[in-house]
Amino acid sequence: MTISMYEASVGLFVPHLRNLSGLLDKGVAYAETRKFNPAVLLGMRLAPNMYDLAQQVGEACRHAVVAPALLAELEPVALPALEHDMAGLQARIATSIEFIESLPRAEIDAAAERNVFFRLKNGTELPFTGRALLLTFSVPQFFFHVTTAYDLLRHAGVELVKKDYLGRK
Image (cartoon, rainbow, N blue to C red; front, side, top):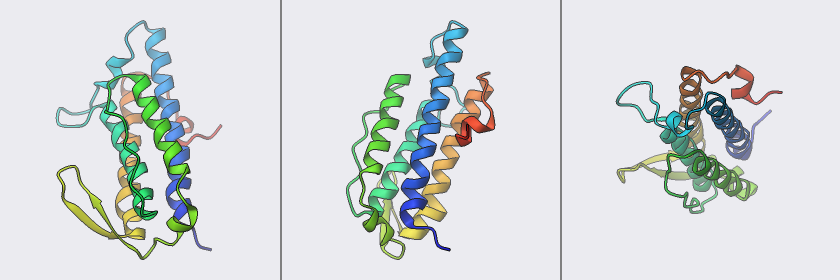
């Protein structure tokens, strides 16, 4: 049995972006219950040289948007500037989901052997086949950032469990 490139990208990113949105909602509820500004959570990091929570969410969205856009041979949606507020991050997640759900399945499914180039923030372009982009770069990057966001919220005391991360009810 084969898994389509569409399912390995859009079919994977969308539900986990929704789960990430739910994690942020739980962070807001936690802050409100304990009477502190939820934005405090967004500046948290596990180490001084690590991205903070807001940047982790931003990077998860970036990988979820750029990879399927490259596979579909389309320009990725321009995401709003990264804000350190929960509403801004929720809007970024919603924009990401809306964009990647709009991408053409047939183009993405045909991209396994297509050459694509992922552009890093510093302008360096990394060459991949579509399949290698997903399996060795974008999917691992995406889950690294989603997992780190989960870990930061847990470390802050937000009561999360594995099903919050996985999205299983």
